[in-house]
Image (cartoon, rainbow, N blue to C red):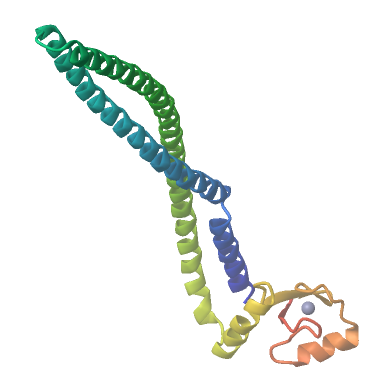
Length: 228
Ligand SMILES: [Zn+2]
């Protein structure tokens, strides 16, 4: 009975260790960071995309305005226009020139924004790569330890299978029933009248009373007692 208890305690401890590896906590943190970084990268990509389209649009418009100005200038120099028309045309060419200057300035501004956004995205993607590498490393470390623990559990399980048939079915049932509510300890030693489960010290009279029961059980914690 105590052999079974010790195997079960060992298995419980292994399973507890499996659930509470420090790497699991780190893994969770890294993955929270990964999610946040991925979101940031998506946003930054979208912003960069918008800026790039704005640059393209601005450059397209600039090109058209430029061509228009060239055409109007040609008309001016081709001659054959009245003084008034020439003056109007002159004014239009000047206006187009101002539009071109303004558009160029706007594009330069957008290019600066694009460079800043580009750098920010690059920073995010390199942080993402580092976090991804960290996550994979942790995953591998966790898998290694789990494999190790699982092998140990399997070994203990085999030992358990050897002990179980040696225990009467009713006693085993009681033991299994007690374990979940008694911190995993269903059976304890009784050494010099002291319960190994809850450390209650039994008087000689109580000891006799307890030992008369089948199986003997602690008066306080009701665990199965194995007299030593
Ligand atoms: Zn007890």
